[in-house]
Length: 126
Image: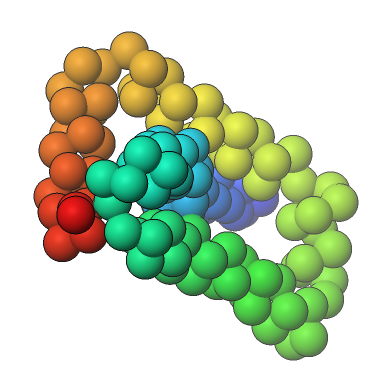
């Protein structure tokens, strides 16, 4: 029974971390620097910086709220996940590592990120 619990923990945490890191890390490390550069060179309006930060801020609030809720209602589960479960931490690192490798070594992923950024920034061009 424990192996199914650990497998479920790995799959759930891997999936959540993959979505979380793609919605926080990619905008912070790709979109935000390009937007700041565009604002400095006066090609993009300054409002684009705030809009670039909406998704990362929302996705940073979600785990914090989840942690508070879990700590309030199920403190033993939260203690187990944070202090005793190596699968919980391993799933996070595997997800971040796989996303990073995908962005670095897959040209179609980089092309998609660039196209999404260009489509996103069109309303803010000067």
